[in-house]
Amino acid sequence: MINKGYEDRSILNTSTILDALKKMDQSKVKLLLVFNDGKFCSILTIGDIQRAIINNVKMSQSVEDILDFNKEYCSIYDSIDMIKAKMLSLRAECMPILDEDGNLKRVYYWDDLFLNTEKKPKKAIDIPVVIMAGGEGRRLRPLTNVIPKPLIPIGEKTILEVIMDKFEKIGCHDFYLSVNYKCDILKYYISQIKHDYDIKFIKEEKPLGTIGSVSLLKDKISTTFFVSNCDILIDEDYRNVYDYHIANKNDITIITSIKSYKIPYGVIQTGKDGLLTGLSEKPEYAYMINTGVYILEPGLIKEIPDRKFFHITQLIDKVKARGGRVGCFPVSERSWTDIGDWNEYLKLISQSK
Image (cartoon, rainbow, N blue to C red):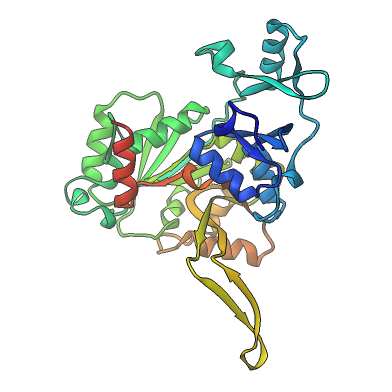
C-alpha cells in the first residue's frame, strides 16, 4: 500500500528494479518514495539504480535490496530554514518530513522552496567532445536528402545544437565535428549561429565507420574526451558518467540504456529428449543497449587505424583483448532518444510543440 497523495512518485518495496525504472520514466522523475504496507521506507534515486546495475544486480530483484537506509531526512520539528539548508547541503531534489515514529507527513520538492533557483552546481568539466556528424541519415530520408542529419530541427534549434548545448552546460567548450555528407551546408549553418564554444571540423574523405575518423585527431586531443553520435539525446548529467569513468579507471565507458521486452507468449525451456524443464508465462527481459555516447582515454586514438574504416566495436574488442577496462553506465529507457529513427523523431517534435 502507498500513502495517498504520492502515487505518481511512489513504489512498493517489493517492486522490481525494472518496475522502478519504468515508474521513473512514466512519471518523468529521477527518484521515488518507497513504501512497505503504507510505511515510508526510504528514497530510491536513479543513482541507486545505476550503482546497482553497475554492480551486476539483476533487474528482477526487489528495490528493497538496493535501498540506502542511511539517507538523511527532516523532522516535523525542523524549521523551513533548517529544511532548506539541508536540501542545499545535500543537493536534494526532495526532502521527506517524518514524525517521531518515522511516518511520512510531508514532502518538500526543490521548486516548492527555491522556485527557479538552481541546485548547488556540480563542478564543471571542460574536456573535448567529438561528434560523429558525417553519416547520410538514411533512416530519415527524404528529409536528409535535403539537409544533413545534424541539422534536423527540434523546436527552435537543430539536433546538433541541442547536443552541444548539453555538453556546454557542464563546462565543455571544445568540439570536433567529424563531417562528410553535405558538410558544406553544415559548415555554413554553424558559421551563421551564435555560440560560446569552439568548433573544429575534421573531414572524412570517405566513410570511416563509427570511430575511424577519430584517427584524424592524433596529436590534437591529449585528455579524456567524449564521443557522441549526432542523432542521440541522453537525459543524464554527463558529469556522473565522467565521475564513474575516472573512478573506475576505464579505457572506454559506454552509456547504455535499459531496454525491456515482454514476450506475449508462454516461453518453454526443454532438456534432454525434449522434456519440459520450465515454462514462463509472458516473461519480460531487460537488456543494456549501446546508446552511441562514449568516454574515451586519449591513448586510444593511436589504436585506431589511420584513415581506415573502423567501428567502435572493433576498438572495444582491441581494448578487451589487451586486458583494458570497458565500463557501462546505464540510463533508463526513456532517458535515451534515438532521433535517427522516424518514429522517435516524430514523437519528440510532437512533444516539443
